[in-house]
Length: 146
Image (cartoon, rainbow, N blue to C red; front, side, top):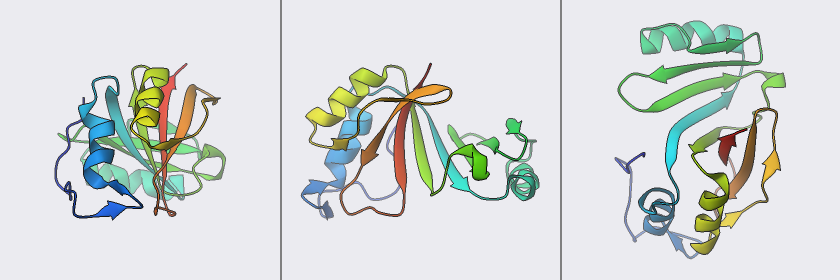
């Protein structure tokens, strides 16, 4: 499970009536939201990004799918960084949260008062989108491989 670390985690910064602490609690503290991996995915040029990822991580990409997708694990962090080409499906910066049980995670987040979309079938996964009030330049996708 991913633990909250760094950044601001207090009740002094409300996000349209939802505090940072309540969002973190819903994602991390609730045992029904078992986050197995965090991936930060950015739209970009996969060919150019592959070399940069290798230089940054000290290793080659963990996965490369032509010009559609490249990813690398950031050593010692439990975080994966990915770059998506035009056919890779990421059109804005996106945080991908891999969970053990999507339905339980979605139900828990909805119960915490968060706006979570319906479950959809993706190319390799079942997924839903979490919308944080006041955030417009980043997507948060919760998924379970299918």
